[in-house]
Length: 330
Image: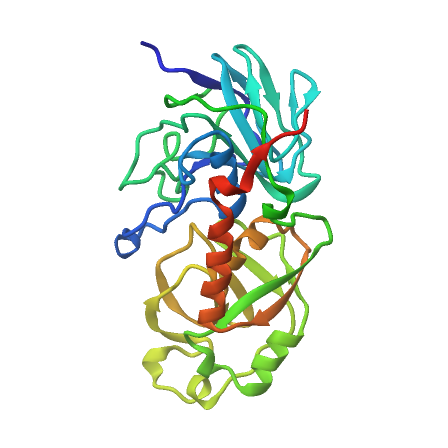
């Protein structure tokens, strides 16, 4: 029996197959987890169509794809609004929708947010690599041949029977908007003792602008200069000449990596280690905000404890369940 496929008519901007939580346990071999940046919207899209929350789906960035379905399907779009149309009819976000064989789904440019997640009942059935279907473009692995979608390619779909006519309760959705200003949680460390007290306060009290020179490897930030402690300025030569240099060490996902005077939030496709300090770390409870922010948006950082960050993550996890779904109004 031939598996159903989805034909890519237009690929969009680096549209990729992802799953959640991505490629775990391979960081030490040089493979980051990849996976969706906004894992909240991603999981809700899967739950809407009857999949497991982490099943493979599409992450559409800024400009979405145009896709033709060769078989009937049930889909859901969650996250940013890309003004999706099914055969020219508008498709609502946060709803499960029936698609007929031969119908064309078109996603445009993001009107709100930055990333839209498209889940299909049965999940995307590309071959897993190191236990995950998540695309790692730099490593050319996972997803559809280790690369973003290309025009003419076909996306294989697994077996599944979704139910159309369901929606995510409004109270359970992330607040994706176009206010262009985000409060982003951070935890201190692992190298906060390299930044002096004035530098830490300056970081927490200043506006930081998301640079257009950003991608899934890292989000570059523009803002004031950093100042350092003696640990950074009076150190052994093997630690490097710049105050932000240190002996190579592992980088956590979400680390705010300081390269000279340029902070970069390390994201899901980042390098595994290097020789720069990480004075603060964005916890995973804030990743959805990173995933929905756009170049030139403003970040205000909020210092939280590890325990508070974990509590906020648990609160998001509690919303990524079947309890957040209801029948849509007719």
